Image (cartoon, rainbow, N blue to C red; front, side, top):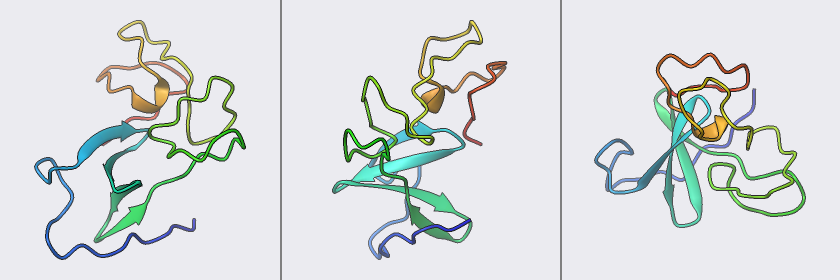
Length: 104
């Protein structure tokens, strides 16, 4: 699986208290800043996905296209009965929705 390394940060490490907005996106957390979404991947940081639907150029973590077909945006609504969030942002601990992927 290919991935794009994010530019190195020398002033901080992304995490719960890094000061950037954190958004759950499928199986990871994106840290938003300066038009980028970064995700921690092992011992380095990757750029997160940009919407591929053709209607926008938003980050998948923030895309709000109503007719989006991008595979990593995942605008499906959670079907587990515990929430009404989008599948890309669902954090239910006992989720049974078939299209949700949860952050570790």
